[in-house]
Length: 292
Ligand code: ADP
Ligand code: MG
Image 1 (cartoon, protein in one colour):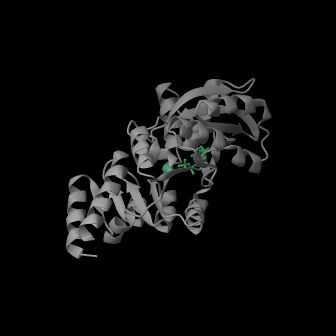
Image 2 (cartoon, helix red, strand yellow):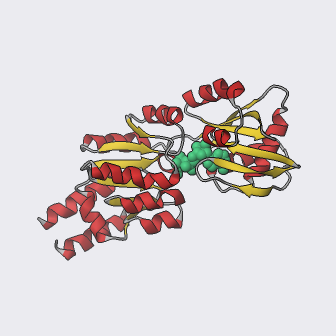
Image 3 (spheres, rainbow, N blue to C red):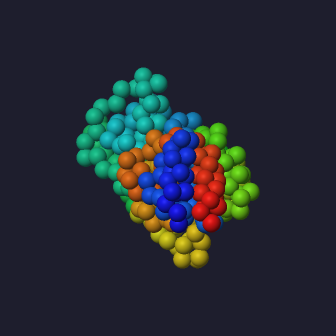
């Protein structure tokens, strides 16, 4: 490789918001045949909003939201921020949380107003032996709409479901279409459940979906795809995406994402605009053409 051409490529990238930390990432980007994309915060805005609250029989909707938001004060997850914002909008003041815990990729638990409160996915409820059957239908309906259904349990009983939706980025559909037109296969990777993930994937024309993937398993998915002979770029934004970014042939961090993600990636797109993926790929193709 001619270092000069690479340096020119790195410079041109910087001008269009593509920060190349590892020059080899620019070289490898040309040979990518698969793009793995994290859903939350990468394909979506990462600014989820509460769209529906379904209280179990005998449970007051305001109590449900207030207790849930109380626990989420301990979490920095975007879903937690959505629940806190929704409680604030309704002027519900939550008490402080104690004994806070956040099983990664599953939810959050803690004590609020002397009650044991847990919020999270079906996996968490299963582990806590909370029977969710009374609300499973409502939860499934929310998922079919592309929302994430968060179960809330109070003192070991299901108290309700909070449905949270995260709009896809305006640039997502056209960027993915351009990448597919250039021969790339696109895989959506998420800790979110299968139904929600498929509903979102469908709106973006993605047919390969890896859902329900625990944070520590994201890198295994990347490794498996590479083991199948694919050359993989992984795009993500979160702390829990960092190992997967490092495991890919090319790791791409989204601007506005966490520092850990940026440090694990060869390329950082300064803005969250997904067209940056298309530009990075074209820059790589042009750079490598110059070298040959
Ligand atoms: P993603 O891979 O889409 O960024 P995560 O791995 O961060 O998602 O989370 C996976 C799932 O775990 C979420 O969809 C949600 O159901 C649950 N979860 C994680 N953190 C929280 C939280 N603080 N409150 C409620 N649910 C949570
Ligand atoms: Mg994410």
